Length: 268
Picture 1: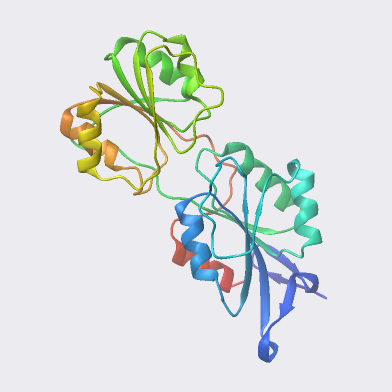
Picture 2 (picture 1 turned 135 degrees about the vertical axis):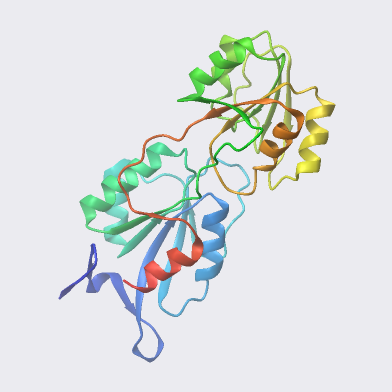
């Protein structure tokens, strides 16, 4: 027996029977963001949604959500589609980082292949306001070229995986902030590494930038409140911000807060 619910085809294999005969939807959250953790907290113990979380495993000591959690990749599109089928998953919420383009593309393709409902839970992008000095660039290679003609002290707040792009401009004085150290460290002779995890405060960011003589900030347009304090600090100090814009999406309908994600799952 198969029933049509919106854009999803839910088979009986994807529905559990809870207490008092309540139908329970099996869902997978592709996590790694504060939004994913907040959603997991909301769904822990939910009477109608049996959710679990998948983390890519790129962070050495991730903050584990209060739901069953698997860590590691699926083996591409086919591997993820096979997992969805074998686990009887009926709905997927992609709550990965806005720059996790490969994971999101795989999720879109796997859900289409397996006939699963999919939504993207993503924070709105940041937008420049009065007093901001943003330089928009399409990717990290362009960001590295953009800092060439800016100040000497460059604050890299782009994570650990793409800092090597700045080796083309090795003469700058770099302040690199990441949750885990880059491996290997980039060939930047005047680099200082700080390991830290948000959320950050404006006062803390101002103190950090002044202490290290930051003259330009490089950031991905991740959105959200956990790391936006650096933008307010840059505005207050009159610093330029090289902003790497988000990659193109996959046409997946978006949800912009946890309430909307819970309501979507409850409506399936």
